[in-house]
Length: 496
Image 1 (cartoon, rainbow, N blue to C red):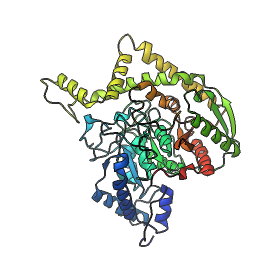
Image 2: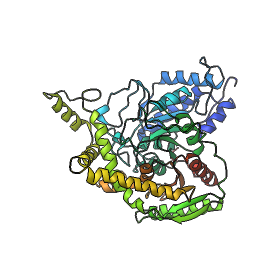
Image 3: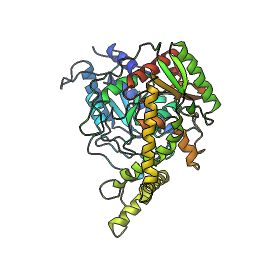
């Protein structure tokens, strides 16, 4: 590279931006300035960011990225696929010295003394972190209305939710405030907001990406993954953030994998199952119509579409809402007003301080799930609820294994509805919970899954979900990319 550049424009994808860098059409410093200007202009409309990074620090990181791209970095670190790429990080992923609230008052003002493993890997690779993204408190929600810091607005409609819990992460990508976001997915929290915001969201196989530094919701279900406008960007980011981590006992050593290896390959001859249980009465007509058109498109690409059945899907929602709250009740016990975060110091003893702090610091949905989980784990109910839910979870996993003995992937809608109106479900927790009915099973079984746009209904995006077998991440990305390239729904703008 030589000296840059003229008047760079905001690119549509990370790969597009990398082409600009390599063709000497932009510098990372210029791109950061463009994105900060866009954030300042758009944020009052959508509230996707909880924190915008310090500009001086960002500029230092951008200058280092430019040096990496030119081969002049003092540490002799080579450029990667994310060097100079602007990211938003969901605010339940620890960032050293940058406030990390998990969308909760109880952590307001908390700045972690360390970086999550995924943040270490991104920063080492030269990525640029623009800020932290709004979310449902402790990632508990499907609409981003549970944030203690006001809801996120879907860029596609001023009265519509963006989905959750990674609502800020998905909305920021859709609105062009960043090129890629990192989110977390416990029951669909990457894929469902990606669907509602018209972008791509990928949940890798459980254990493929370290959870060290992720503020835990449900440890056996949580998984970090990328949200981007295009599938290839999701694959490139997963290459950077994946891999075994000695700091996370649940991370898996899968060897060296190139998640982008199958990107661009055709899908002719691949067998794809369509489970009828995912097309329930709750699926909106417009979502069903878009899904059926997607089936025809994938069939035209040479894949074999075969209807199948996964009867235990009907139990997945109940299993999830026992296991996830149970694990949450244990994980959130650490927030007691003693060690870090908010503390109510007007009470006479430590127990009463903890009670008052948790009463004031946690929102209603978090309290609801802690109570559900504590009840399910309590003496006399453990066997009836938690133990039985884990047994059914094993059966669900086996059912998926049997399906993947016949199919390369499964295909479903991502969300049964398009983005619903703000406030329309806040008084009915069950209606909110079933927003994740299509995404929860992949978390229960620890499987890779991705959502990509497949059309619109009532002028709002519809998402298509590919689910693969354990470690079948590359095939899932291959299928999603092939569909994306044949339809180009990823080019639909959400906001200007």
